[in-house]
Length: 159
Ligand SMILES: [Zn+2]
Image 1 (cartoon, rainbow, N blue to C red):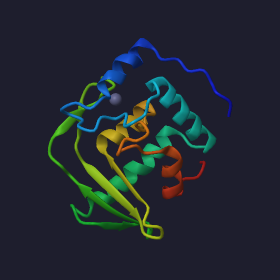
Image 2: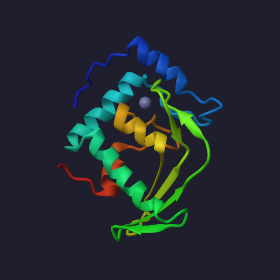
Image 3: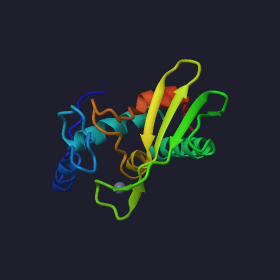
C-alpha cells in the first residue's frame, strides 16, 4: 500500500470537532490520533477491503454478538463456545456525532475470547459508527475497534 491521497471535506472537518472529548463523550472518539478524520476513514476502509470484509459485515457480526449477549441480562453469556459476552444496558442515550437523527442507547458490550483472553468492548453507538460511517474511532481511543484486530478476534472471513 502506497500513500493514497485523502480528502477532508468541510463536512468532515465539522464532524471532527464533534469527535473531541465533550460532556456526552468524555473520552472523545479520536484518542491520540493526529490524523484528519478523512484520512482515518480512508485507512480503515482500505484495511476492511484488504480483509475481504465490509463495514456492514463487521457491524452485523457485532450486532449478532450483542443480541446473544443481551440474553444474559447483565450476566456473562458464552456464545459460539468461543466468546464470553456481557451486555450492560446502561441508561441514557447519545446522539450520533456525524449528525444523524436519533439517539443510541449507552449499552456497553464486553467480549472476551475464551481461548486467548483477548477482549473487545463496544456500544450501540460504536456499532452504528461502523455500520453507517465506517468509523472505528481514532488510534489511542480506549474504544477504538481496530478492524484488523476485530476480524482476527472474531474470526471473520470474507463472505
Ligand atoms: Zn450516524
